[in-house]
Image (cartoon, rainbow, N blue to C red; front, side, top):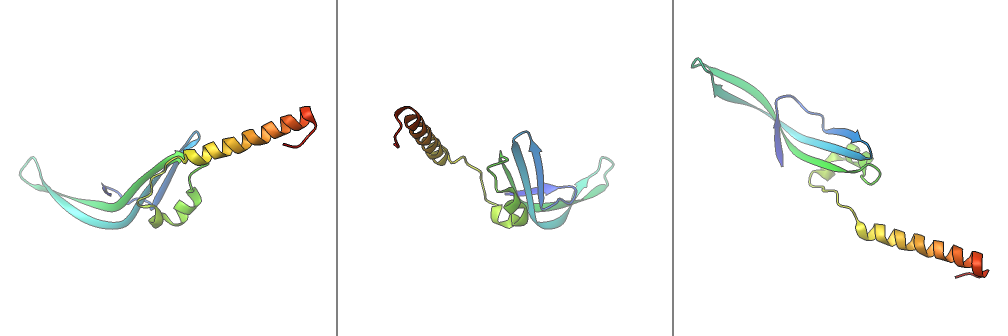
Length: 111
């Protein structure tokens, strides 16, 4: 996606709020000028800065923040999605371990 700004932008801007992080990527700057008619029949010239742009947001502990900051070009089309399958598998493994510990405590065996 392309985005225009009136001021130059940093390649990566990071904002953290609570446990969520927002990253704003602005790459491949091009500069241009637009002309607008004035109220008194003159013209106003404004400089703009256009970038290849992406916004990424997600839980701070799940985003590859350091890699995004070091290699923003790899993330121009990146969209964070929760990998619920991995979270569920992790929960299953934790439950299995908990059950095995409980069985070992009560039954004195390994399960």
